[in-house]
Amino acid sequence: MKGVAWGIVAVGVAAPLARRRVRLRPPVVAGLAAAAPFALCVAVPRSRRRDVAVCVLQMWAYLSLYEMPNDDPEALERRVRIRYPVVIDRTLGLGQLPGVRLQRALARVGGLRRLDALLVWAHWIWFLVPHSALLYLLVFRRKRFERSAVLVYAVFDLGVLVYWVLPTAPPWYASRQGVIEAEPALRRLMVEQGEAFWRERWEPLYGLLAGNPLAAMPSLHFATSVMAAFVLADAGPVEGAVAWTYALTLGFALVYLGEHYVVDLIAGLALVLGIRRLEAPLTPAFRTIGRTVAALEMRAAGS
Image (cartoon, rainbow, N blue to C red; front, side):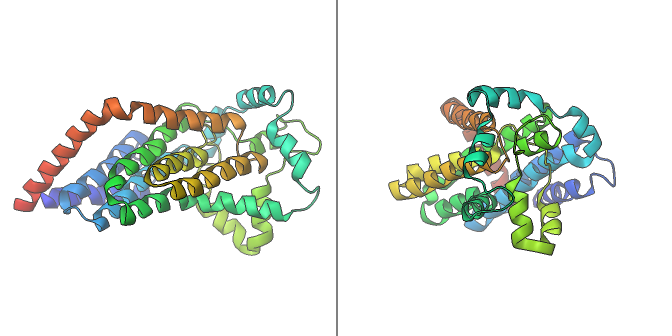
């Protein structure tokens, strides 16, 4: 049985890499990649190292789902929704987009400020924040890790499905398409800061990390940071204060930098609250899955 489990892990890792070459359909890629974390739990006894590896495989499955809509950029651009978040945010901003208002109030015309660098770095370090929060719990609050990991990665997994059903463009894209009319025009300050800081290394770095530029609704940057803040607050007041300070700073940064609409953040918060609301009624089902995986692990260990 261990051999079968390791085979599933290998296929789950390889499928996203080979999807274009062998023309695998997205549901097949998603299913194979999603099976890998469960298979690893069968193949390897429980340990901190296995927990980390399971999280890595979970994110590998998420990234494949996140990137696949952009495998055909032209088709994605034909499907993407641009106008509805502009209309909603203009209503929330009492006639003007909150992002436009913030840039008019705080941005330097034709240049960058130290505030821009601070907020851009708050954006960039997000790639580490949710996982660092879980790593902290794994090392220092082991009993809280399993539940917290399920909650945080549920945000990733459910949020990415919306990117398929309702692909939505971010504000900077709408501005480039002329949908957002503002003077001065809404800028993408993250790119400007990236070009200024990384210089010739910016283009290859951005190309590596961009993934799917038309995936704004909901804001998983904000949603995962908020869920991380919730689970860290459960661990202690100091952890919670640090995490909530970061989450709120990031939310402000995402709107100011032109990366997200306020409605994207609201949708991300709603996703988090919905998952937390469903935690209790779904706990028996997750325990059943856990017992099944544990039973398979024991059979594999005895085979």
